[in-house]
Image (tube, rainbow, N blue to C red; front, side, top):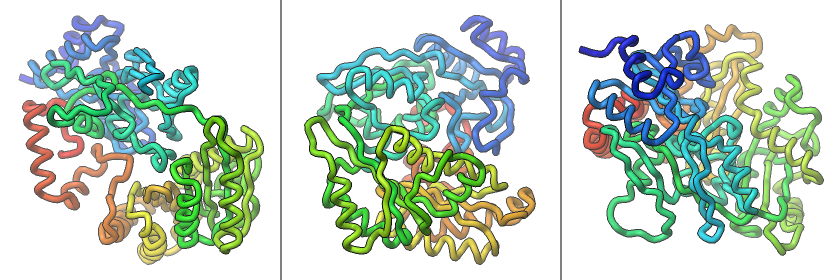
Length: 471
C-alpha cells in the first residue's frame, strides 16, 4: 500500500531528524511557489538533507517504498520541473549541500556542491582571480544543481557555452541510492559513455546531482559594454557577423531588445534612467572581454565600422560600473517587467542564427492574426539563436480571458514557425511538466524511445521526478 503523508513525514524524520523535514502544507510555500505561478500542487513532505549520505539514504528509502522524489535547487525553473505534479511526492531540497569543496586554478576547475547559489560560485571563483562564466537573471537564488539539471544557458553562451559545456564531471545519487562518483577534471577521458552529459540536462529524472566539477576561466581585466540602436533583427544579423569577425572569441554577449521593452521598464520604474543613446525600434546590447595586457578599444573600432556600413545609427558605451550594471539590468529585467503589464504568453525557442530575423517577423505577424492588438516583446540571445518570444496582452484586456482564449492558439502558431525553421521549442528552460505533451508531438520518435529506455534502465520504479519530461 502507498505510504500516507503522515507516514512519509514520520519515516523521513526518523531518517534525517525532525528539523530536516517539513510536513505542514502551510510551511511549504517557498518550495511550491515557482516563479510563473502556473503550478499549484502540494507535496507530501519537503526533505532537507545536509550531506550526500543523507541524499543516498532518502533514495534507498524512496526506492523501497516507491515514493516519488523531486530534486530541487533554488526553485527558479520556468517549466515546473522542480515542483510537484501529483501531490504525493517528496521534494528533496539540496540547499544545505552548499560547500565549495575545492578550487584548482592550475587545472581551471572548481568543485561545488549542488546547493551552492550561483552568485556565490561567482564570488568564490573571483576570489581566485578566475570566473565561472554562467550568468543568469536568477543567479542570486538559482543553485548549481538546478542550473546543471536544466542545462541552463544565460547571456555568455556565445563565448563560453551552456551549463553542460561548463561541466567537467558530476557526482550524483542514483534511483537506488548508489553514488556515481564522476567528479573528474580530465579534459581527455575516452573510457566509455559520457554519463556526465546524460545527467546534465536530465531535469532530475535520471539521478540527483549532488556536486560538480566546473570549468573556470581567467578573469578579464575589464569589459567593454555598449548599447547600439538598430533598425531591427534584420540589421542585427550582419552586425553580429561583423563583430564576430572583428573580435572573435572575446565577444561575450550579443543581446537584442525591442523598444517596447524599454518603454515598459521606464513606465514601471525598473530603470533609474534611460541606458540607451535615444529612441530606436530595437537595441543591441554588446559586451567584449578585455584580457590582461590586451588593448582597449576593440569594441569601439568595430562599432565605428558598423556606423560606416549603416548597420547602426547611434550607440552609447558604459563609462563606469554603474553604467554597465544599468545596461545589463535593462536586459535582465525584461521578463519581470512584463508581469506589470498584465498577462503574458511566453516562448523559449531557438533557431539557426541566420533565421532569427525571419522567426521574429513571421512570429509577430502570426500573433497579430491570432490576437489583434497583442503586444510582441521578443528579446534575447541573438548570438546563439535563442529568443524569448514573449507577448503581452493588449492594453486594457482582461488577463484571464486573454490567457483562456489565446494561450494555446499562440503556442501553436509560434511553434509551427520555429519547427519549420529548423529550431527547438525549448532552448534553455527545459521540458519539466509544462512541455511534456509538446515534446511528444515534436521529438523524433526514435529519440523518444531511446530516452524512455534510458529512463527505465536507470530508474526502473519511476521515482525520480515522476511525470516530468517524458510524462
